[in-house]
Amino acid sequence: MKGSYKASDIKVLDEISHIRLNAGMYIGDTTTPVHLVEEALDNALDECLAGFASIIAVTLDTKNHVYSILDNGRGIPISNDVPKTISMKLFSGAKFQHSKTAYLICSGLHGVGLVAVNALSEFYLVEVYRNDKHAVFRFEETKFKEKKIEEYTNVAPFSTKIQFKPDKGIFETLTPDIDRVRRRLLIASIELPRSTFVLNVDEKREVFRVDKDKFFTEYCFSEGDKETSKIINISVKDGVEEFNVKFCYSLEGPVSQKISTSVNLLPVDGGGTHVNWFLDVLKDLFVSKAKRAGIKIQPYDCLCGLRAYLSLSLKAPEFSGQTKDKLINRKSYFDKLVKKLKASMDFYFSHHQDQLDLLLGHFEQYRRKLDAKKIRATLDGKRASTKFTKLRDCTTSQGELFIVEGDSAGGSFIQCRDPRKHAIFPLKGKIPSVANVKDILKNKEINELIQSLGTGVGPHFDVNKLKYEKVICAADADADGYHIASLLTLVLAVLVPDVIKNGHYYIATTPLYAVTKGKSFVPLWTKEELAKARTKNEPISRFKGLGELSPHQLKVSVIDERTRRLVKVEFSKNMNKMLKLFSDVAEKRKLLENESINVEGE
Image 1 (tube, rainbow, N blue to C red):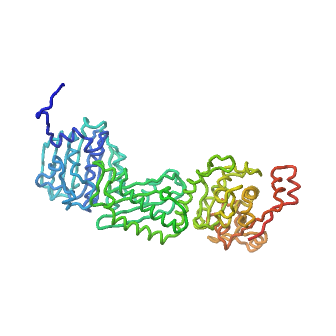
Image 2 (cartoon, rainbow, N blue to C red):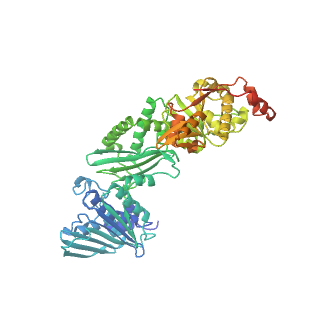
Image 3 (spheres, rainbow, N blue to C red):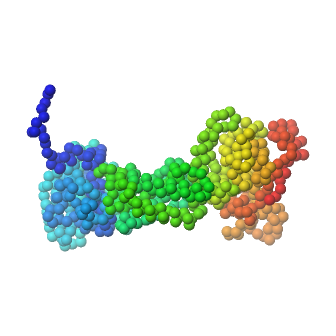
């Protein structure tokens, strides 16, 4: 057996040597020296959190690979060679939990940061202006080289400056991750709006002044979020500890949740306990509210499309490692904050019923989308492929379903509807002119529409399962609109005839003209009303279709029960002849002269 194992083989490394030998253990990643920048930045940010610093500047000279971080806080104490101690001795500092007198809330926690910066740099310098003194402590290749302390009575340019050049033998590249530094300063700027944060990269300067609302919409939304619920802000405190949440839901966009968080100004990309208990609060709250409203959803449905930014200020945060990318405090640590957050959330939604109804409808729609994948087609036993990508449901069981022409009109309807009562289903393009049940159901739009009604078709049809009191066709008042309304009526007459027979199907009358005075809008429904308005020289506007009506005008014309005009459709006694009209071209002219679907004004 080769080699031996003797007492002389045991080596005791000094602190600096151990860091250099095991750099990843202390800074997580040695690809770039960005963590060294962050270690010095943490200390400066802690001065801001404590209320003593109002300016932080980070300078990155990527040509010479020299980096500096300065602040105008209290300045590191220079008596007893404190700068030397905190740069060479591990576990030294004023932020340990058992003796935290200088800092109540801070991001630097372990007493490792500046020692690691010194250990992994070719040269390292601490410069301090404090109590009419100017002090410089200089290190080269980890060794302490020089100390200068002079009197200084002028206005100090800063309080503390940390400057260093990373060791090229440690890092793969000497240029730090600039985007990571930029994000640190961005988070700091939104959490500490009274402070100024500056990033100098070579010859370019960037000053960060971003409010939390702008940050949320730019960094917490996903690409494709076309419509969102109202952004909600809730804050709770327990002593000096604080939890702030800003969140909303994407109503039309990626369903996956997107959550950004910060703890004591640190971006915590790995999430952790705080994210988990916030999600639990949301699930418990909305599932309880849905149960009371008679809406069936699953807990995870309440996270569909969630967009959130969580920021915490904690006295004793615990992270998964020196890189601090995940919070691992036990759940019990947050008991008081969680209790207050639950109460605040419940209070908010108890006083904003419209927003609660909108979100419950959003969750229910997502649940139906998932359940739809389990529905088997009635024709050949294959699984249905519908995804309910169009339906915007309402939250009450006896609401109204508006079947509208196109996404543009659908968007306007969504803006002016009452989400508790009005469901919207936009049709894309014209319905195929067919009268055969099998062929109709091959059309994706019709397949989704029928499943939205909830009645089923054929042997599975049950009109008592209709989800809406009224099903309303809202199309443009032109030839194409009339054609679409006719085709839709035929489809419903073939697939779900009892919906029409039982008086649930209507066609909305759309005005071509209206009197418009400022914000006033009065539809003109008849030729007589139009002529009368003209004789009075009223300002008259003409509308080619629903897409030209503003949400307010659309509400007056089609949605508001006090002003709209609906036409109830009655079932024809000669449906066979009506169907033949759509399949036998030779019979069309003759049948059109004798038969029609009768209508009766509401």
